Structures are given as C-alpha cells and as structure tokens.
Image 1 (tube, rainbow, N blue to C red):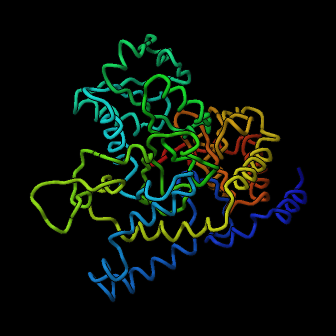
Image 2: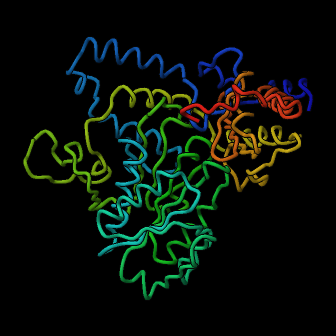
Image 3: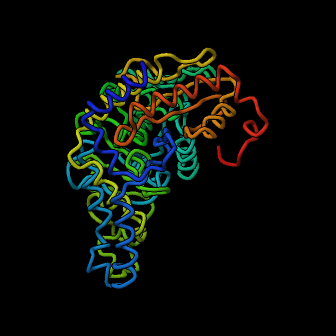
Length: 422
C-alpha cells in the first residue's frame, strides 16, 4: 500500500472524526493504547471541574451535591452496554487484582468446601498470582496450565511442564466448586478465545467462569449475556482510556446477584454504610462488591472518558482494527515473526511480533516517535485503537519498523540498555 492509498482510507473512514475526541502529541504515532489509552479531551475537562468546583468549592458537600457516593454504580452502568451486560450488574471499584480476588471468592462461594481454581498458562501474571494467594488462604487448590479443551466429561489441563490432569465431574466436581479464570484476549499474543464455546464447555463440566476482559472491553464487541459468563473483570485505563491506574470494573451475572458475598467486607459494601454499625451486613446485589471509599478523581476521569464511546458501534471499531491489522502485517520485514492470528475471529485488536532483539528494536522505534511496548522475552506489541489511530499512522509505523530492521538501526548501546519499566 502507498501513502496516498492510506490517506484515501482515512478520508473514507467513518470513525476518523473520533480522533478529535482525544489529545495526542504532535510527531508521535501512538500504538500502546492496549497498555494505556490516550487522553480524552472530555476527561481533562472533567478533572478540572471536579478539582476546581466539586472538591475546591463544594468540599465535602459534593458527596451529596454531586452524588460522588453513587459514582461506582453510575460508571458501572455506563460500561455495561460495552460488554453486553444489563443495568445493575456492573460496578467500578478497586484495581483489577482486587476485583479478581473478590470475584474468584464469590465464584468459589457458589459451591461448598475448598474449591479448585483453573488458570491458563500465559495469561497476565496477576491473574495467577491472585489465584495462588486466594488458594493459600482458604485451602483451595490452584492449577495453572493450558485448558483450551474444556470437555463435558472432564476438565483437562494440558501442559508440557506438568502431567495431564483429568478430573471427571463425578469424582471431583460434585465434591467441590471448580472455577475457571480465563482472559478473553491474551495480553502477549493477542489470541482471542471463543468465549461462547469455552463458557458452554466449562458449564457442561460443572465449572463457574470468571472472565478477564482487560484486552476486550472497549476494543471489540463483548456480550457477557450471550456468552452466559458468570463473572467478569475489566480494565479502566486501556481501551476505555480512563487514565493511568484508573479503577477497574466487575460484572456479576444476574443469577449470581442474590446473596452475593465476597471476603473484603469494607464499609462501602455494607448494606447501610452510614449507620456505622459494628457488625457487617453486606449490601444486596452488585453493591456487595464495593469495599472502600471510591477514588473520586480517577473515577470521574473514567466516567468522562466513556463519553468517547457515545454513538459508537463496537463492531465498526473491530472492523477498522482488522483493516489496520491487515495494513500492519502486509509486508513485515525479514526476521520478524507474527504471533497474532491472521484470522480476525481469533484475535483482539493488537499486533504481536517476535524478534530476537525485540527490546532494542522497540527502543529504536520509540526514538523515532513510534510508541509500542515490549514483553519478555522477545515480543513487541502494537495496540490498534481505532478511535484515534489512522491508517496513515500505521503505514508510517510499518515503514519505520522496516527501516530499523533492515538497517539494523537497533544495534546501538542506548537501545539495548534496559529501563526499569519495560
């Protein structure tokens, strides 16, 4: 494709005007929105108002005057349509790790006695870490492996590093709850699970499913209702553009809301938090997932950032991401391996490439204004964020990548020196 052809695609792109909803620095091609979304102009304006007027002028009265207290539910209800959830089933509260802990505990509570937590090898480490921690606290068992194959007769874990584990429901699942924690889109490779089929097979095997939507929500069509997902967690600062460290969201299927319980019994999860009772009585429904005082500044930024999705069809977003993907991978330089599937139904909205000098190549790209990221040991990731990314951006990025690889421009000491955060 030529530059002129890429420019023509941008002129014909119905999503092109959305770029104006974001603040983007001149001279930078930003391909790391799958780690930290760009700044929505609405979020910057909202933060100025919250700081200057709500906090600065109205002070503590803003908990009532500006309804700070119910912000977790209001923002949750705004996220709900983006993941196919009904109102009242999503709350924004705490970090991803904490919400995974709460949801795993709630999922295990659907059965009796110590449970079995299955996680997938290669998922983001925090998912496995949290599962290990919860298992060690309450006598549960955690198994990590590859469970692409969830059969109706058993949950089979296949891994080259451990022996095969088969647990027929009659001998294992009937005695204790089994929870499957799985990420829809893998953070390293961009590989996407068929969630409808995976959840169906898990349910047939007697398991409950907790889905990590961190690389799905806001990037592509998600429908937790259609897939019959039990619980889900998602990120506020990647594709939802809520800002660094933005709080995450948690979803609970309506059938699990009655009697919902989780072990972090903070005062905001109390049925009557301002009664200041010495005894804990959990709130009903999704509010049972709340714990402490909501972080109003970051939650307000996320609330305003969601304005960028007003009137947006996520199917159109995924279609543009697929077109950007095809442009990116059309003529990869020699020595670069594509890890992300070419089949659009089997991937999210990123390009993952493998190169033996991936870290140095990425530093060379950043030095020339193309920002992606690196993952150990040899993976370069490029996020395709159609709300603000242009076809011409991808065309230029691939030209720069090809030049860096073909001229070995990465082979410089300053590019090989590792930073603290990579």
